[in-house]
Image (cartoon, rainbow, N blue to C red):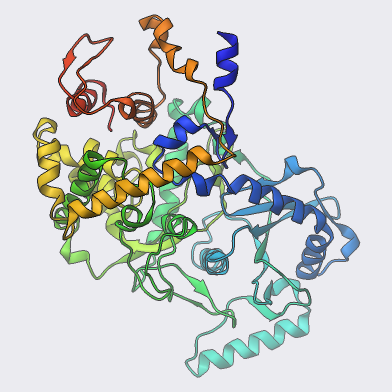
Amino acid sequence: MTSCLSKMSRSLPLLKGSITLEDALTEDSDVLHELSYPEKRLDFYVYLSEHRQHLEELVSFHLGVPKETCKAARDFREWVHGSFNACVPVYVDETAKCRVKKSQFPGNAEEKLRCEVATYIWIENNCPDISIPRLRGFGFPSGRCFTALENKPILRRIAWFFQRTTLWLFGYPTPSQYIGRQSPFSPDSGYLIVDCVEEGEMLSESWNLLHHDRKRRANLFAGLSRIMLSLARVPFPRIGPLTIDNCGVLSLACRPLTCILQQLENFGIPTDIPKDRTYVTADARIRYMPNSIHNTLDGQAQLSALTMMRSLLPHFTDRDLRWGPFILMLTDLHQSNIFVSNDWHVTAIIDLEWACALPIEMLHPPYWLTGVAIDRIVEEELEIMRKGWEIGNFWYFSALDCLNGLYSLYMSHIQRIFAATEDSGPKFDRTVSAYWTANTAEFIAAKVRDKEVYSSQLRECPKLIRLPAESSDLSSALSTDQRVHRFGSPEDLSTHFKRKHLQHIKMGQTLEGPVCEMPLDHKQHLRNHALRIHKAVS
């Protein structure tokens, strides 16, 4: 038993967690692409370590302090990484501490950095009640860099004031309070310098342990609601993120660069969205990801869901709001981006990437707070938000913004609004999916062939280790009690069900639930049973 378990544990790391060949073959994301991320991150860390002196020079330049007073952290454990960047603490005079955030991947890195910088500046100017780290300076790969006004000599500040006043008098856009110039360095990637948050700790450090504490949750909800309402006070004329040009002027002249768009383009999936356009399609993943469709039934089910999502758009949106108002939303507000006190009062928000002006109907609390009554975090001004929960558009917009979860969210939260679960099935999916595009059957057949090629490439990939055959018989030696596990959320249960059970069932195979002792006629019968009885969406 011990030897089998030790072999089963062999796997390769991803940016988050690890994976074996068995799991990779059933995963909905492009694992072949994701396997390259940890190595790229390591190379990036090595590069930053070798260029710590350069980071110290950047901080010295932007803060206007002697270089010898700036020391970059040598211990990797002090560094923090995200999916698209790394943050390195730099100590100034051994008292103050800044962090240098450098972009990790090329492509959209400069576009993303300009949007994040513009969001920092806009919130500083328009929402002073929102606590964010102080932005000290930033630079772009093109060589243009900007320094906060207060860190410049007095004569340069006076010149900036007269220049800004002149532009304002003649009706020209005025620059922000950051003074630009050509960088004296040769940056090969973008960066920004912000103060480290000294008060509080990341919510992710205590969320799992304390999220059932009602008092702490009430403090957290109140803090998040104040942030959402503060951002909602200033309407925008269009959809899209803020950006900053080489003159330091903020504008709303960029496509909505959300996290899902970045992920699609990182996977090499064309989105056909110019940088000045303001919409996105949810079909790109299905068309271009090699493993988006596992088999014919899976393809029909996914395309049926996409077709229904298109047709249901009028139900979940208000035509009176199609021209606005649009408000700025922090679309990446997860637990690691929120700093809280011991009582969970919000002390700061960090990492403002993926902020975007969106229709007010899309204003909802983060998905991980959906177990909370909505009336705890809204006020009269946002009655639209309450209505959205009543008609279910929270789940509709969440599905559109989820690369791999659209079908699951559609089946578990949207489809049941209009019809009973048992009314859907292979026959319904086969009929409706035909209206997704012309020649749907040929498209699905081609995608199934793509999946076969992708699976072959995975099996031949030297980075993945195949599970031994004897491990597949391990569960048969366990009792029913030993095979039953608890899961932290319905999503975890659904993932386990798809990976460990559904994918191994052959067409026409007769089934019986080992716990429920219920005969099941076919694979779709099992899916319906899992949804109705066990709340496992597949």
